[in-house]
Picture 1 (cartoon, one colour):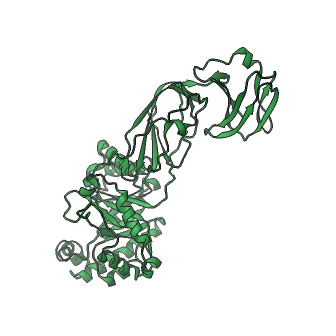
Picture 2 (tube, rainbow, N blue to C red):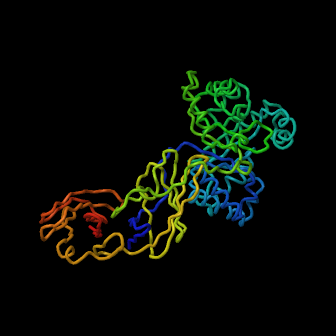
Picture 3 (tube, rainbow, N blue to C red):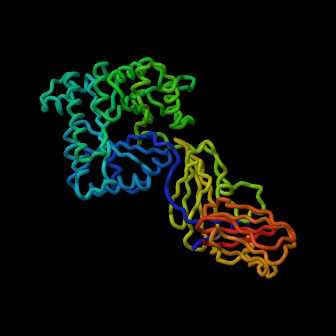
Length: 490
């Protein structure tokens, strides 16, 4: 059953074509999620996380605090399965990673969870992210020494810590024998050149901390500081690798961060674009040959600022008085070049449909008649619009010919003279008697696309055959201020 709605005397035909997709590139747009043990199993906290991920268009999520979860507790692992499944099906996340600092965590917790027969592939971690600050003197001499280095027989030195990390990364890569799609990453700070050169062959991605605050004048420069570029040269000396810079949005961070700059009215995409432009202007042959910039990662979820409403609120396009069938995008959402996504929420079903901004047809399914509301909102990386509500009355269009402004059947004079039909090659209209008016004939498919249009002049009689494929079509007949539509299925 196909339904229409009437609003402001305008009929909009919306058809079966629900789905979630996006036209954006597959660059990584990552987020570190902390306090996972607290979020897990809390519906309000999980909803807030999913909303934030959706609003910021993140597609790559790395989870901290997994070591605080009891993986032997079926209730907790079921909660984790539910959350990871939801991230992929409702929050549009492509990759989900577990962050750890030792091999035992990955083996006993993340990997055992992944290999559990109760865990579906959609509920698995597909990234193992190593976070072990082997360059930190205080960490190596203290916490790391007592917890990992001494028990594993490594000296409590920077060299010993780096050897420990290398051994762990090699072991993590070996886990691909169990899960071939598994990827490994490592976060790094300020490391030595010889250490940097050894990392590209050990991981799928390297995540250097690019913790730089905005300048006093409000501008940012994230790529070109000499220390940043030198680190890239050191890494590139080790061969090709994928680069994923980390930007710091943590409130009250001890490290330099962009939080004050973000809350002053900037978006999460601006640092990425600043870094990307710097990389695109790079001239060093070694960097150009060996570094593949694949996206960005933000640190960290609970300390990040809220998403600002910086985009214009979408609304109907004015000026079309008699659109017998108005294409959805022309009425519902003016094109906004600055938006990456357009998101529809249907009140009656709760169904959320996501379109990329370059999609010009936005089909929505109505399954039952009655009052309904569509809520539309646009998004760009780190920014959103306010929500615009469209209230409507959903009604069955039927199979007859109807006047579009009040759904009255076509007058007898018209209905007895005009016959629509289906033939082997398409659909057609037969004007039995000569017309007394000029008429505009239009054929529109179920996605709102114009298949054909003809000007039929006063005095014409006979058949007009229009080649079409199969599917549902609307034949639109308009003369002066009156317009009629008929639905045909071929």
